[in-house]
Image: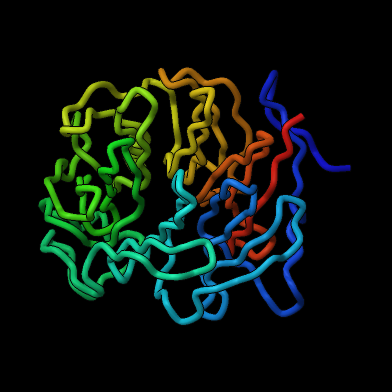
Amino acid sequence: MDPIVGSGRYTYKVREDWARPPEGLEVRACAVSVDSRDRVYCFNRSPEHPIVIFDRDGSFLSSWGAGMFTFPHAIRIDEHDFVWLCDEHHGQFMKFTTDGRLLQTIGTKGQRSDTGVPADDFSSAAWKKVTHAGGPFNLPTDIAFAPSGEMFATDGYGNARVHKFSPEGQYLFSWGEPGNGPGQFNLPHGVWIDRRGRVLVADRENDRVQIFDQNGRLLTIWPTELIGPAFFYVDDDNVVYIPEHNGGMVSILTLDGERLARWGGPVHRSCHGIWVDSHGDLYVVQPGEWGRVRRVVKYERQ
């Protein structure tokens, strides 16, 4: 019997093996997103099948992107069904159609800004070596979109900043610096623009969510305990879903940071991505039986 997790209105049946890839196609996901037709896109750390697409019942539909990526990190499907991908080691954000046609690239492949991190350090601990903030990009992590079309990118593993871009992708300005004080970051890992127009930033290694206006002014820091918040999904009811990377937890909160439900534990440490489909089902990237190799687990809303 599939286990049940969560509480109250946010109770879910766990479906670990919902996805059925073809024989020989291994899903080593780092991130997940869902389009307007409830097709599930897994950003896969596999050079042959970087984007693997399933229907919501787990049937394999297609894959694309072979040879295009070095180190996949984040995926986001915007309101127009464009697929945005972050390649951390390329230092780029790329915009695609749902069938894999490249439309736009932000960032120069392989170019890293000066932040004190050695140019040959691509490790997950590079953020500890950031001595000063720099421009775009140095091992970036995520991107979000305002209704105006302006874009906000977190630059976390080799930097400590949020960068703002015009709808056309022109760099506008940045904010943040390394540290644990208000407005400072230790690995800004995920970003989202909520319905209040605020910029939510997952300040992962400071175990907190910091919230800014779109000019970079700090508004508040959520008081709720979080253990390494990684990414966000905010649904149409203003409910916030967060995978807690360092605690292996999934938290569901209000836009004021009040927790509604939580589950998980150390066995799922290094959970990395989250998205919600039109039925309220969750898709969470978390480690499987291969240790740190992640897969996408489905949580069916009860």
